[in-house]
Image (cartoon, rainbow, N blue to C red; front, side, top):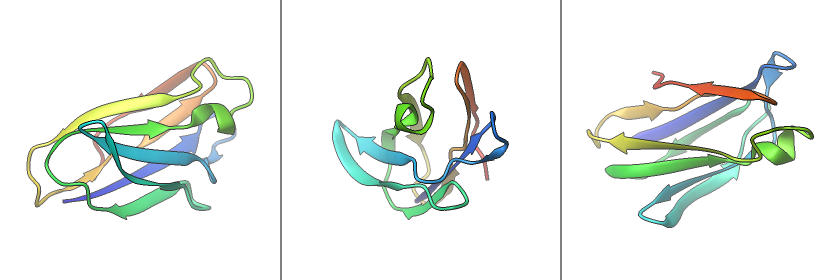
Amino acid sequence: MSFSTHVLDATTGRPAAGMRVRLEHEGAVVAEGVTDADGRIKGWQPGAGVHRVVFDTGAHLADTFYPEVVITFTVADPGDHYHVPLLLSPYAYSTYRGS
């Protein structure tokens, strides 16, 4: 199983570079990093089960209603790739299972 994410700042229409992100499984941090210049993190290998990806949005957006965005998802097939993108603005966010 591999995991990737992409964060786009909807207020600027640009990638959210330099955002801290961590991946948790059963209460433990299994991976953490910072989005690259294109707002991406890739190559994490967390394994099966329920995971939480936590985005430090408050450090990226100075005036935001959501200082942290947490997305919980289930890895049903450990052989599959899981991509969880985040579209972010100060008062809203959206996500989906990408490819």
